[in-house]
Length: 145
Image (cartoon, rainbow, N blue to C red; front, side, top):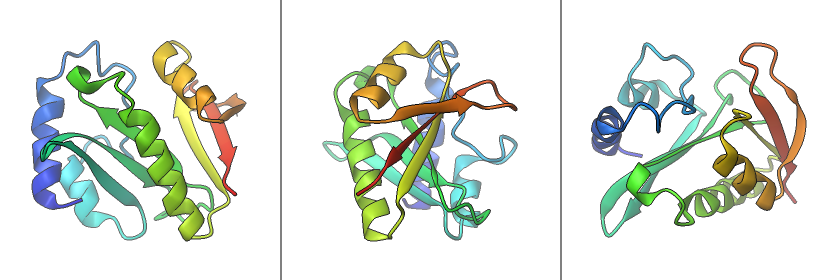
């Protein structure tokens, strides 16, 4: 993802309704902007989602910079494009990247009240592993073949 795309995403995020973003926790360091985190990333990956050449979201694979062997998937799609299959496409793309880079497991965290996301992740083969002690979120994993 380019810095320009990340700046566009920051603008989209700032315009979203707070209730839509209440479950969004895709950042390692909430005090740093998305563009700054992308600029500082060494192994973590950030991918832009677009539709008709317009930015509509992004997904990321984080934890690699901290030397975790299982990356954590994060996703944001604009509210107007939510529920149209872009999350499943992002998951497929993330899994393909993991396969190509010999990563065997993909992890994600989701709030128990984020029902739409829970259904999407389960539909795409993710299995509940445990609750996160720090955030209380549910941790899901999927083996990548």
